[in-house]
Length: 207
Image (cartoon, rainbow, N blue to C red; front, side):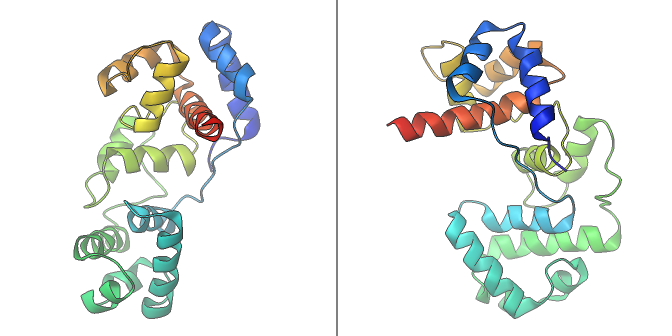
């Protein structure tokens, strides 16, 4: 499960005690709500389905997949589905191959989502071996579904934008600089990322 409200508060308080600019950000927008997903195969499949489409489009595709393929919580069912069935639900050819790759990795036991390595980088390395799961998707899964407290998706555009704003940078920091900025926040960087998304949402609402 993802980070709870209490864990987010504890981590952000720990960061804020050493970094006044982060303390000011919390004071400005408040503590973020938890972002929690169920750990396991279905959440990763939803990640693939939702890549580069709107929330509404992803929901529509998911409903069509369930109707045309069957129980989407069972990877062997998706692995056995035809390309035609996956495409008919709205998946691109590429996403259909990604969905099947994930299903085959899990159903074969090559990827055991109940026993990912405790080391974050090792866990990310296992996840990105699946076609269609890049570093960002792996980090989001580990943060939202497993509640790993020090995950830092520095490649996320909104994280870069908001960390730049919070920390007073004139321009959006690069992924490398975003990683460097957050080094001082270990082992609480996951909460910092969730705060950045919360801050970004507040900024967008104010426009």
